[in-house]
Length: 119
Image (cartoon, rainbow, N blue to C red):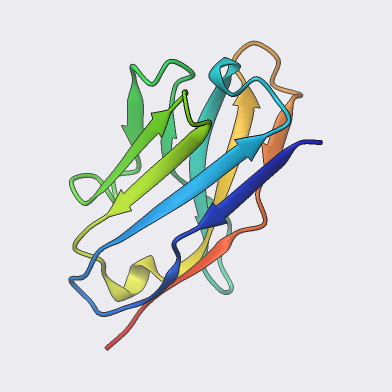
């Protein structure tokens, strides 16, 4: 049974930090490209960051570059999103996604974790 379980969300003040985790089970984690997306109320879901299946290459959206860092631990089947210098506009539900590196139709999603940045 495929599962992606996010954790680490919560309420944080502007300028603060959070680290999101996404634990994966039920599939060969090292064969999948892992990504974080977010969706704010009334807005479309947007791609935040991606790590290739080996973790050797990462990409971050311009809106988070220099503040957020995606990483993965293939031994622990877990992907992380370190979020620093958080801003109110980072408030959203954050989703973990797994996409097979060679078969795009094999894509899985987590249930999401809420991140709220507010004073």
